[in-house]
Length: 329
Image 1: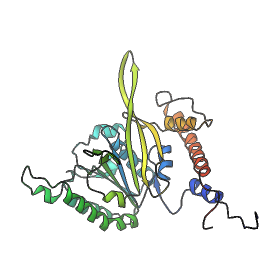
Image 2 (image 1 turned 60 degrees about the vertical axis):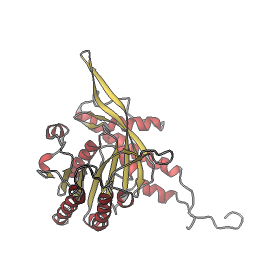
Image 3 (image 1 turned 90 degrees about the horizontal axis):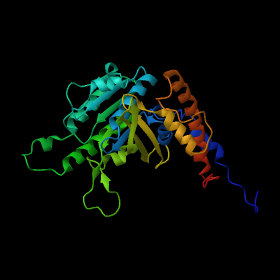
Image 4 (image 1 turned 90 degrees about the vertical axis):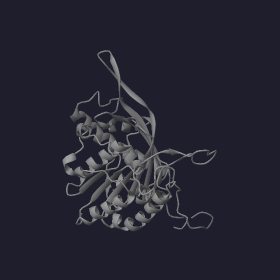
């Protein structure tokens, strides 16, 4: 007791449990990057809506493919669905990355409108029969709406009807998404706001519905190319990406991480974990190795060791920034 006042209870134990536990009330899907999982608060969360936003060439689609692949590995009884609106899916490249096309529910035709998307997601949820699910829409920007399709060429709607339709749709399905243990992942393109002098200079199509209904909003930024030289020939073999959680209802907002995406492989989780630990000045077994330096068995073994260390250090760092006592304890 200090100055005759009762000391408030410490938050150390509670916060440590929060950052290191498996959160038994929630179920997660590995993103393919351990540091990104930590930034998300555990990974992509079932029963929630996630929005991935990024400019061109930031591997938005590939991040979704990794999520679907890991979902089926973690929940073999689950149902994964991939819906495209851009008519740009490359099955050969997807297979090269290990994307299990034969296990993912796909449509022969692309979804054309918001209304078609709403009907499809409702049918998908109804057929789950208690199984967990993951549904990816790639992407929101290419969706039109029935009002826009009826317009004569040259006349625009300024996206107003699409935004209203999306807002109404999310109000109707958000409870079903949560109750059915579905992760609804929606991919969006970045759009520049014309004439903005201050504040947020970028936006995405569809209005503000996802700002309210998404539990995760993750923005991807392009950092640069990864090049490799073989027999005197140098070619780009991937890109470096920065991800930031702009909204997070599972963990803290504005946590970011960096990772490399390698062609026909995916995220180099070992390099991302090792570089993050090095940045935090923590010793690890990582000596700068990438997928080019390790065989599969050694890579997977190092990945497991580094993942455990990253989660432990992440919890320590987050806890060190929190208050030591509770205001209302």
